[in-house]
Image (cartoon, rainbow, N blue to C red):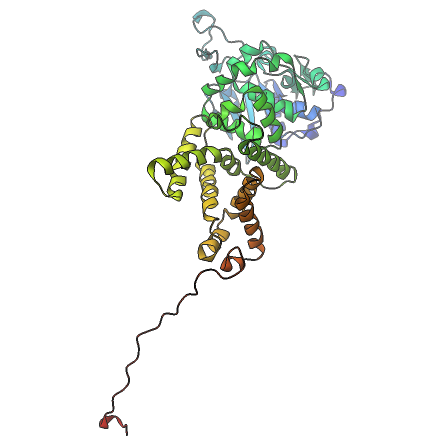
Amino acid sequence: MPRDKHPVSRNDISKNALKVLYRLHNSGFDAYLVGGCVRDILLGIQPKDFDVTTNATPEQVKSLFRNCRLIGRRFRLAHVVFGKEIIEVATFRGHHADDTDSKSSKKNQHAHSDEHGQLVRDNVYGTIEEDAERRDFTANALYYNIADFAIYDFANGVDDINKGVLRLIGDAETRYREDPVRMLRAVRFATKLNMQMDNAVREPINELAPLLANIPPARLFDEFLKMFMSGKATANFSLMMELGLFQQLFPILKGHLSDAQSPAYQMLLKAFKDTDKRIAEDKRVTPAYLIAVLLWWPLLARKEQLENEGGLPPMDAINIAAADVVHRQSQRVSIPKRFSLPAREIWQLQRRLQVTKGGRAMKALEHKRFRAAYDFMLLRAHAQPDEKKLAELAQFWTEAQNNPAKLKTGKSGAPTGKPRRRRRGPRKKKPQNNPDNGSA
């Protein structure tokens, strides 16, 4: 597609991405923008990041840029770092030969699949045409050539974008087995781009969803952030539930989300809606809050078990249950401490906010996680409308933020408990009459 037939302009491209493209081109290599950035510009969306593909090997790319580092074993990539912006550069991927066919393997090029068909190493280089066939969706197999400013469309991706259809390149089951995360990407692209999944994209997902158990937990956490922290959490949650994907990411919630009217389901749905709203309003959001919501019901179940079986005090039970559920969930989707620790503080404050008077109540109000814990309490009250005491407690803390004096009197507004007695010092002795002291 020549330059006069498409809207992609260099004005739409990051200056740092242009630097990478031109240096590769001027060094005698092919250089293309590829994938989502090209797709997004065609859709009128400002790309968040820019990916480059080339016939230069990662080592050759590194030799051209002092600010380059090589990453990855499964897919060897070059990251060219410009401050906070990273331009990812990938070498054209080729078709991988059978590992047992030593004659067809090339030196320093390796591909290996596990027993599930998942590619665990894929460093076979090829041509741009082969690279296009290795891409996941047709809408992502678009290449913008810095040499002539043309777009190369090897899979009718532009046509699918115009029709609003999300299609896979190649056999769907094979592509999902190669990389099960593609099932999550299918959901994310469908909601982000407002595209309909082709039947071939949708149909295998329910059966193949359990393959996500083979993905490293750290990688699934990255996908969790993309799914639920980008403004499409509600739509992604609904579609993932429908396709059996959400249950694979959060098996700890099995039994809690079977009924769409259950408090657990309603609480989670409201949290996703609130998150989407805050992102749309350009307000701050944190994964810690969503993690606290996601694990709240398993936490309560474990806390109750510890109290009943071990006779633990409530706060001790909360702390032990918190450690347990975070550990269990991290076996599937890792939870970094920078998010799990604030989530635990939100849970602990649910207990502390039951105290509504005195110094302990004032300390809770001044706690750095108070606002998140307060929002969490409102969310609980929304999901459990029959819990009148919870609603009253949420209302109390709503008022207490504007009138901290309430914390001195408690809920009723009247002084509670007996007044404190003044401590008296030891009684002074009367001076005795002494003729020598000047007394009469």
